[in-house]
Length: 163
Image (tube, rainbow, N blue to C red; front, side, top):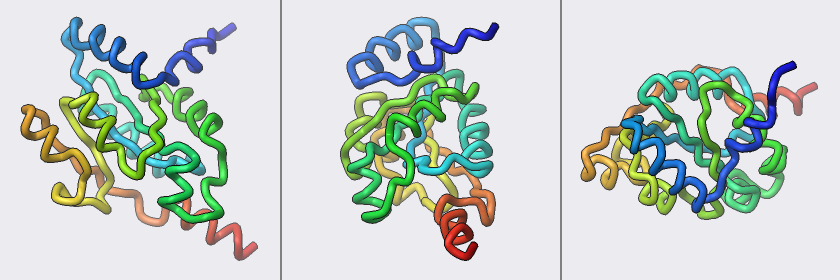
């Protein structure tokens, strides 16, 4: 029988994150951070998260809360509630921690973490990535991952609408 209790333990709040960061850094682990809504988890997300995880020992995912996702994506979003989205992300082997944030951007979370590597998708540039300047100023780096064409929650929803 597989132990699954560790999945829920990966979903942590900001205070728990700080404690975990101290432990990881004490053992010399490199920390990567990415974020998003991850509304309907799809192969594009898996591709991006797998690539992000390859940049460091630990991958932290900042997850837009329901209120934050609604502001960002529109009144009918998110499709899946934050607890369900967090659980799906936490169940992925490449994800070490999931932290919800309510703000429009993960700026505060990024500044609290100051990851070694900040990662976003190819629809961003270094100039448009929130927290990039702060991470670079602290000796970290920013990586931009190519998106998989045609794989997005928006394209999946448009396809569903045509059925």
